[in-house]
Image (tube, rainbow, N blue to C red; front, side, top):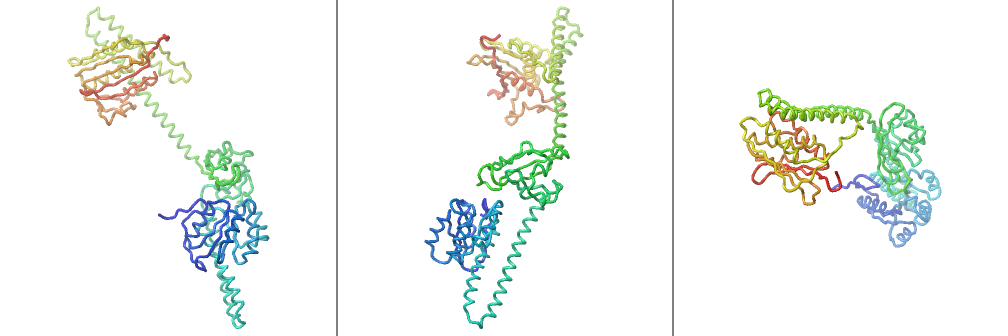
Length: 538
């Protein structure tokens, strides 16, 4: 598996050729993970590593070490003794060892002191790039070797001075070449940073910009050199105070964050994401990488999608209302046709009453729609309902609606004494009519529909089962039949896919439930469970 790098030095471990075989490198850092990371990279490059977690620990390691020490890398910020003091001691004790200091971007004021005090040869910033790290160490080993070679050459006879000068010139040329390579690598990283089209900034805990790419300077409409040191909310958004919901301090505590910011000057919307540059800093300190992305167009498209969804919802609502009105209108048509065909006079009042009842249901449905369209309108009052009588009424309507010559058997039975159910009579009637009509349509006007009502053992829930002798429900469709507009009927059969969705919604609104399973002897069984009126409730 390829090496994917680590927290401090991303990238694969490079292979290099050192000026001496297996050079010895001492790494001193109070963060053990840093020492392990550097050791893993340099061992992979072919170096021998000594690792210490403090200056005192490093002195003990050096006391036990035999042989040359080529390079020492020390962190600047360490308890008890900082890196500059330790490297100053190294300069006096191990004269030949090349001294490298780890620094952060916030340590720039200490660099001059470190140079004067310890004679530092190189600096490394955290986090580092593995290639850059190994290149710096390789150059340090080469310089150690060159100094040893120079001292040896200065001891040769005067006849060899000319060759020595030539070699010195060659070595100086190599050093200049390597320096140029490092400069080009730095420029490459800077170019990569500036080539990112979204604004990127490095911000400290006081909201001041420490680094920024060209896109950030463009967003601020300012020269990138003048951008450094300004507060991010003022430079980028013209605000005197931090942006609302700014996740900067959350990020300094090691948690990535995000927020959307509206630029009051332009009206554009920016999505801000933040990450801590290092996760080993004390909470509330350190620097945070801020990435800004213009999401104005995305939000406009979202609003358009929401509008389209609202339009679709209006269509669904219209279909639902049409489906709900269809049942009572069918009753009105049926009873009107019976009167028109000359039924006995004594039957006319009963049919007229049924017509009046169906018309009243139409009015109630329209009223419910109007209440739904008026936010804050008072909800429909629930009342105790005799479910048995309501089911009988639904079965009678289904019998009247049955086609002439059909062979349907519709029956109802109550298992034991039933309690009333608190609900809306029109909603419950719609629930049971949809289940009965669904069963009749599944059987094709021939078969048996049984409706059985019973109280569950705890007497707090009524269970109503609507069973038919039809083909049952395909197992692959059971999870979908209660979805709005899902139907297995052909288009010419007039199925809207709303009947069972209405059943599910009514049961849910009354704090009940509905499910379906197939009977062993064939056919489907829809089970509805509704809370019953308990003692002490009217």
